[in-house]
Image (cartoon, rainbow, N blue to C red):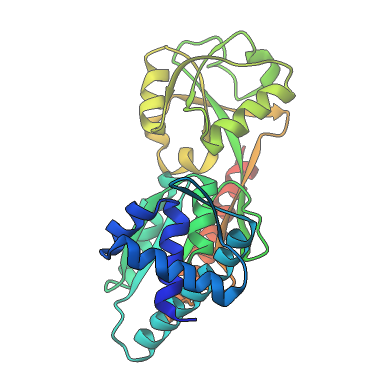
Length: 303
């Protein structure tokens, strides 16, 4: 069994199309077919179901693909480790997030102390982040949704309140607190369906006994704040966002019932190699959110 055979198999398994796989690998299709057949002979089992000119990965193939993926992951991690040891690898950290608003201040603070580090940032769904962590494509993800997998470590960083913001002159604007059920007849401006924050706030409304009427959807909290200022509805805003951009949002209210909280955490793969720079970044992130939590607690005590 050769590494080239495994590489060819993985390409065919992902595409489930011999012609497309041959084109991607830039080899002749008959040669590719023979390579896959020899691999199946070595294993003593077929890896694909073949019907006419179509192929589909079977149960044997699916089991074997998982192992092959691990082989290439280990090889890639070994390459990273060797490059780091030989000082050839640049100080780069790959990071995926579901909470982009907290990043500018976090990254700027880290880069002030570590100006030679480069970041590659991705805005991803939770499922995509989990796959990328397992496959070693990213070093960390910072998420407001728990990422559960036996190959991943997820460490909570901070728990924050979710507030409501209302337009100037709104009947609620003279208040500091509110029970969410009181807002059941209001028009809401919220994140797009499918975002972790949208799922969370929909759950809060469900706990309060109503389904929110969504007039506008967006993916930028600043734009949502502007729409609220214009009197087009009310909106949920995370407490950290308010802390960083208080002047960009209208009047906010703490929600006393139900408990509207979210926990932000950092996740990484147990098996992926992490550079010394990446380890330093994780410790920095933990300390950054520890300080942030202290600021939020003082704010609560003041109120």
